[in-house]
Image (cartoon, rainbow, N blue to C red; front, top):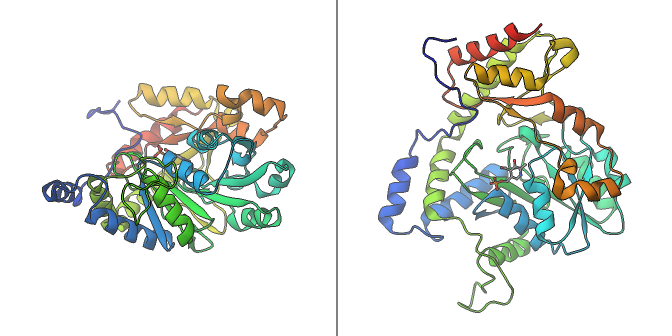
Length: 375
Ligand SMILES: Cc1ncc(COP(=O)(O)O)c(C=O)c1O
């Protein structure tokens, strides 16, 4: 046990720049709701990062996905292909519009939805695909868009966990019809709760902006041509995001340093594996992923996580496959879905602490525990 014992958290926001100053500025301006200079600035600057013409700020990443599906006119009875190895919001958003998520296995080479398996799941009801850039690694979007185009489907990119990742040199968020981001507290760039849609379609952007603001006609106050939602993000939240974007390189460099620190220290431990990186990808350094091969390491993933916890180190198991969870299990069984890669990864993988406050000695400490526990 270390002398300076303190819990090492899984995630912690890096708010050491002008976050506080800008939030105070927003408060003093009295523009604290969903109009203000920080919203305009954030939407413009984030478009620059995502490589899209438009960004629409919304109150969280789940809402970004929900709005994307509403704007694409997804309806009850429709089917949407999604990975099962993802956060539940990806599939929940499909249910919010009355449609059904159909689960497709992931590619063992990049852990994202496998384009080779999409066609087998397409039916007359299929309207689109949500590809998730899992744990910061972009999905194989050219292959996914290609299959989608053949079958007349749209593609939404759930880039919630992959801020600034690159796919063949193109930024995540620009790789499908609509990109969706989350700025939850554990994300690379955060404002506590927040989200954004990124796209290059002025008509669709107008529809999304209208739906975000209760459905009000932008040219006629209190005239509502459609039923909309209050999915807006505040100027105060965008003030934080502007400060985060200002320090984008620094925030990314610190996280990349943690990634390389883990890779160096955990190298050559029998049974400990890393997230694969495709030749065409520059992943975003979100949460560092490790897999545990029970037979080679000598302990299960859960045993190792429990041992880390005993020693004050927090970690997270990979997502429980969505097709096995109560809201989706029955439908998935009826469709006889088989997702062996998803199930294997979900049982073997977990995330190690990844944030700017981790010191070299924290990394030494965490990795020494993992090495010493191997048997
Ligand atoms: C892949 C994925 N999609 C969607 C979301 C939902 O974002 P939020 O928590 O901001 O609603 C998250 C995460 O939190 C996520 O990891």
